[in-house]
Length: 435
Image 1 (cartoon, rainbow, N blue to C red):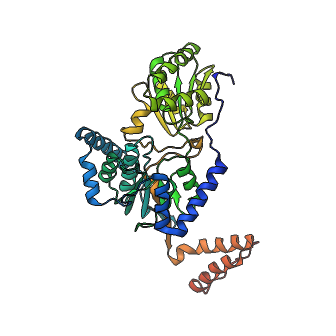
Image 2: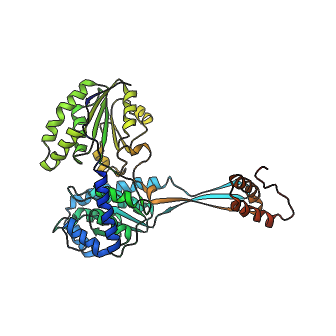
Image 3: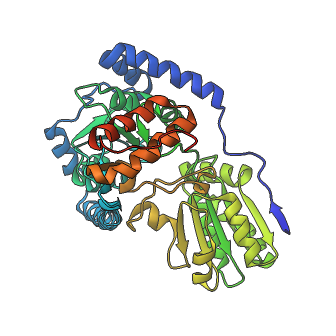
């Protein structure tokens, strides 16, 4: 395979995992032992906030009054799209009942988890869209209790637009608590909350590590790293749009990788020439992130042809994958590893991040090799059941007894034996392992 790197990353998107792990482990243990009071201590230390942790109806109403009507309309628009898509996803899951053999019936049921904890980032950026993505899908899935948790800003509290969005989308409780302490409060059922069955939503490396440590005790959507994006572009692509899209994703964070894969060197060189000026034109707070991400983590790769481009993309398994190339249906059929796919210049990752309807909580750091993003399915347990007539279970009991004895599991075999003896007392069965 022929891949030429016109730009190679000097760093990889990994934090000092051991240091973060020990810090988070200590905080979780402290809060589990100390309860509400200890969570409040950490809130005072890290959030520098001493207001209500659990927002009242009056505070939610007051926050909504601060949100401009045009922004409210945009939030309602995005919520409607996410809800519509989530409902379509839920329709793909149905209860099943099938007669395996005559008289032996097995089935499946889709049952939503009881309590969901939705973390909504609110530090450098107020992630209004994350409130929409996480709370809406939990509501459509049928969770009985949904908590939205977002870090407050010192002396201000949670961003009013986040509060408005979480309330609109169906959160039962909105909590002003950030970072590990917020995740811990939802997991341990602090401040009067039910203990969360699942934790979802993006967050910084400390939030991600808290979810990693707690996984197993609660469900999580995924173990997330820094957001990443890859663009596949051929000679027909608009270099300015490609460069703009790369920069738009690099602003997520200093360690957010962006990659361009192309079979056209001229396009690659144009894009590389444009990116620095586009970054310089950003507001300062965005510019710092984008500049570092482009400098240290970005890559530009020239491949021999589109098949090589597709193979390269599948190797990276990006969180966001954009195709700006001819024959979009070919790419849709060929590509296999991505969190969410954006086909053609007419769409962009930014649309999916904010308002299209597909979810923006997606697998990062190559996890798209084995999982998809957040959906109603993440909140649902697919469980199975069975029932049988005595005649229907007869052949199953015989097979179970023989297989169990072959495995050396005599107790399992006898559970089948007693039923055969009870239901068919006049029949003889060869239930030995050797048949």
